[in-house]
Image (cartoon, rainbow, N blue to C red):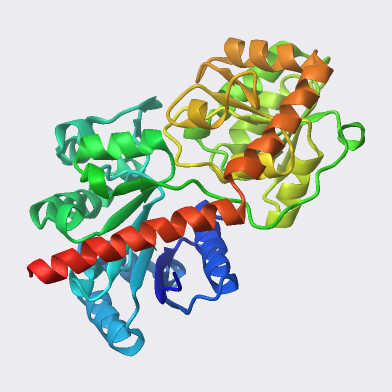
Length: 406
């Protein structure tokens, strides 16, 4: 199959590195390398920030339905005539209206990088705990009541309205030919919230290329965290676990930045003898080098993740992973096989799991070998490309059927 593909994406702001942006770029390169004709329909959230208050207002108004994007998509379709329009993100400037604009002119594929179709906050979490009220009740009123997006009812309004409007117009049940969930867990949750089960496929993220792995003896005696320093990532539990471990703990190297950084640094400073180092925001290659050189990656998330980019990177570099037993993570990281699990938000559980495997270095190395084997089996370019082509083909067939019925 050599489909002509129009890739569609709203890039998040350049000040906040995004896994979704990385996936979009990686899949574009994958398609180009395999000989597909690829075009793009993209917007950038930086457009909002550059216009100040006016940009914020116009961006909010564009979230539910952007008539300019709808018209631009129609012009793009006239110019390109793609077989498949593969959408990664429409928030905030593109809007779901483009699916109605495409109609049956091309197969419509949407990757579910988060839960925004039914959860205005995108991450099903409120007050530090998992919350699926909007998904379970099939209503965005709970999000409006609590002001779930940025702790503001005003900021939540356009997103909640978008969820309501898409349900009203049957956007997700009639205007998309295939959805790509990143894990089986996410697929099940989104089907329960309202997506047609027969249209939701599972394709995990992949790591491009075939990176070499460091010999175990060449690695640092360190554990690494890489990601946003925000509440849902479980950093408080992680730092507290290291403080409980004390000076005997291996060096914890924290890659990333975010709203909690100063609070976390102050907490770590209460025990200066405990080896915790904040490296700040690094470039992609620098962050990957930290993962490749570590003996363990820890991801203490307290929310439902999609498919964390750092996990596929750890697998590619043969670095074992310790993760919270929440959402899809236990299906990606198998306890005692390619990593270890602990209870989310529980410093004692995190400490027990990590310290136990750290004090058994031969078993830790074995987990690293298994992590690399997981990559070679499931997360390579070739494996991912095969799955993607199957999804495209099924989407084309569904779209053809709709065109015939119409």
